[in-house]
Image 1: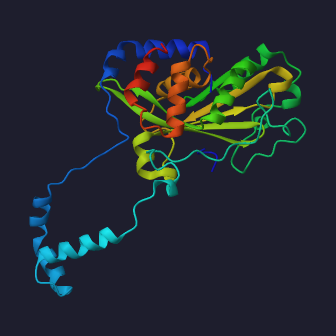
Image 2 (image 1 turned 90 degrees about the vertical axis):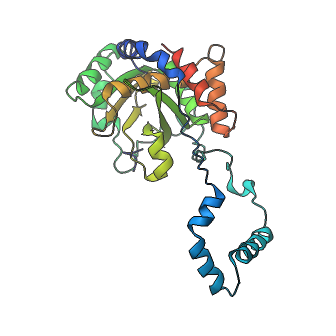
Image 3 (image 1 turned 120 degrees about the vertical axis):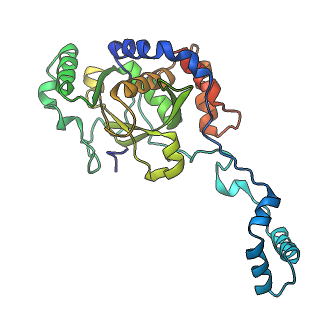
Length: 309
């Protein structure tokens, strides 16, 4: 389950900046895919289905389609009014966030993580699946970073990074308040940006995951949609080495390249790793999205994303 279910190093930022530069002007034209309204001409619909309506009227012992309409109109008026509050965040086009995770310490870990062994759910790998933790703890941070990058260098669809504790703690705190969000991704050869949905989860004390999915697919299939990129952050070294090791995987054939995924990771870092005084607008966008505020606008999100590079 969690296999379905991020700070980028400087070289990723430079690659993403060079990729995004010539595409910025096209970002001004964005189609808001959150809402789709279909209009039908009532007379045309009535004419198209008049035979069926007449047959239905006869089955119910009525003389005409007009009588059938009057009967059903009366039934509709007797129905109780729709109560949005019974559906939670009904005003928002997105589902509510998952339950709030357990409290965290100043290091971004739960109170029990330092004393309890890692117990990841089935299918979710811990850091010990990649490294010998006992030997790794004996190494200096620079050497750990080198080994971690080398460990993932051979896979063409993998992502990896090493986060400093200050950066990770800032991202983690924001992620717990805003576990869902959307990010724009420019598309070469098209006017506008493609929107991607992201969702954070905290499946174990030492593991944090974030998955990226095409927003259009998520709106269509919901929890059954297939993510194109999965990111995992391992916090086992956070207290001793003040490092968090990140690794990710891009699924081939789902419309997103590794370079696209790097850009999404960069945008995620800049929205979730913000400083309060410098990122007030980004923080406001996160808050509006989490609240389901109808004032949230994709155009404003894209404009803010342009400032990242």
